[in-house]
Amino acid sequence: MTNSPLIRDISDDDVEQVSALWRAAGVARPWNDPETDIAFARRDPHSTVLVAVLDGTIVATVMVGEDGHRGWVYYVAADPEHQGKGLGRTIMAAAERWLAERGVWKLNLLVRGDNTKVKRFYEHLGYTDTQSTCFQKVLTPL
Ligand SMILES: CC(C)(COP(=O)(O)OP(=O)(O)OC[C@H]1O[C@@H](n2cnc3c(N)ncnc32)[C@H](O)[C@@H]1OP(=O)(O)O)[C@@H](O)C(=O)NCCC(=O)NCCS
Image (spheres, helix red, strand yellow):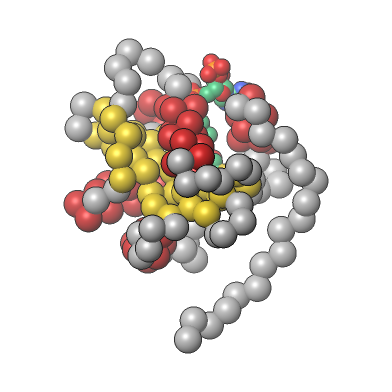
């Protein structure tokens, strides 16, 4: 990578740019509203969204948090114009550091079953497939 990006927490002014990056990188889903997801991740100190900024532009993101047991990441994304230049590694290292600073010793993440390319990326970074199945139930917030 030519220049090292600045890593920082997302700010209110970044939400639109981050939402656009998620759509461009293909991590946005029609049933998940980015603004709602970002606001929820920022509601307390257990989670946040980290952004990588290069020449004033957000080029990579990760949503990182801990649930009292494990660390988790979501919305791992590098701008398609800048992929393959180390941003994915950089943003994952930032998430790992964020968790390690909070005493978390294991990081879990979900990869869609058919996303072989991304599985290879995580394996390359030292992650192993736990061969677990993710179960989910939609709840009504009270
Ligand atoms: C996945 C993603 C974040 C990776 O970002 P990136 O900036 O392209 O990756 P990097 O350039 O930082 O790659 C880091 C390392 O992984 C390696 N790598 C990346 N993709 C790989 C692959 N498919 N197979 C093997 N190695 C791979 C790179 O060679 C590099 O190795 P090195 O650091 O030892 O030289 C990016 O491709 C992306 O945004 N994809 C679309 C969104 C997505 O699917 N996100 C994951 C949701 S679970």
